[in-house]
Amino acid sequence: MIYWDHAASTPPYDEVIQTMGEVMKQHYGNPSSIHRMGEDAAKLIRRSREVCAQALSVKPDEIIFTSGATEGNNMAIKGAALQYNSRGRHIITTQIEHPSVYDSCLELEKQGYEVTFLPVDQQGCVNLDELAAAVRKDTILVSIMHVNNETGSVQPLLEVGKLVKERNPRTLIHIDGVQGYGKLPVYLNDWQADLYTLSAHKIRGPKGTGILYKRAGIELYPLLSGGKQEAGLRAGTENIAGYVAMSKAMRMAGEHQQVFATEISSLRDKLIYSITKMPGLELNSYCNGAPHIVNVSFPGMKAEVLLHTLEEYGMLVSTKSACSSKTSEPSRVLLAMGRSHDVASSAIRISMGDLNTNDDIQQLLETLKVAVGRLEPLSRKE
Ligand code: PLP
Image: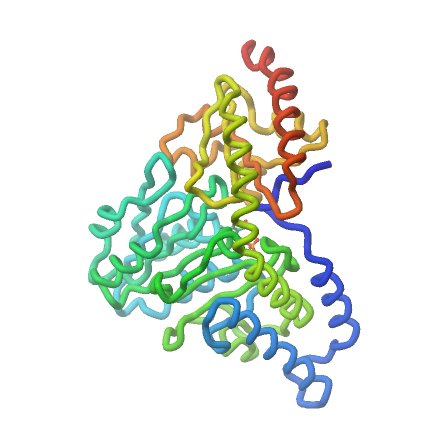
């Protein structure tokens, strides 16, 4: 079996698994308790926060631990909308965001906010002139992703930050950084990011943990009521083992980023070079995209059927993102990139990790030829 679904989730590092077990066994005290075991647990959380802050070159009290990026994105977008609604009720995002951003914005629309969903070009990038034209006096937030989870397209965050802050210095910038961290360099200061979300299970950390970076001085309206954990923003007893393990994964993924980018983009380029020789195929990812994602359509074929045929041969790929792969709708992201209904319904995502090799790519290419060859006569009949 070869795993090609790293954009959905990744195999945890051995150190992460070991740490989870050790911390759960030895540090089960509640960090809010004021006895020794509670204090030990609180100390572990403090240390994890420092490690995560260091990985992002920010201050520890700018790090909020969450249950993952879905929570972080909700917290950032809804929290900012509720906190700053006296400044305005306009939000800008893009048509290709992850559902945790996109649907949060739709929810806010229902509550009377105005949302501009910016279109993207054929390569999945926002147009800066359109963004500039959209920023207004009452724009409280721009939420934009670093790397798209379906196609790997990368947004020009440096220019986005500059432009948004020039037009309105009070507009907050939120970046969904889930698919970028550990794959591409992260420059929170240069991007002028005010809020930035991460998820640990995409970087070989544990599931159910993540980070929201919140620049000092920015307030968010808390979505949960209860205890005062995470500076009052996230009530509930902390996932200590998860946070310690996540901090390890963040450090390791950060340290490996350059090597990852070099090695995995060479696998990606090899895959793209060979795959584009297959007839009838349409490529939805580009060599200027993130190193680990290749999205490709086989018009006329049902993506799910191709996925399961590849699975029979031991290749695990995905269709769309993990969060929306169980719906039969064509990919919203690919439609926004101007692809036809057929192209958007026949796309598979191949997402690579640091354990994949040249040999794996060779096997995948051979398997794809066999699987597509098997399905082609059937798709012609339909
Ligand atoms: N944002 C992006 C770009 C993602 O790819 C994902 C996960 O697929 C998320 C947010 C949600 O992350 P989590 O699984 O931690 O909720």
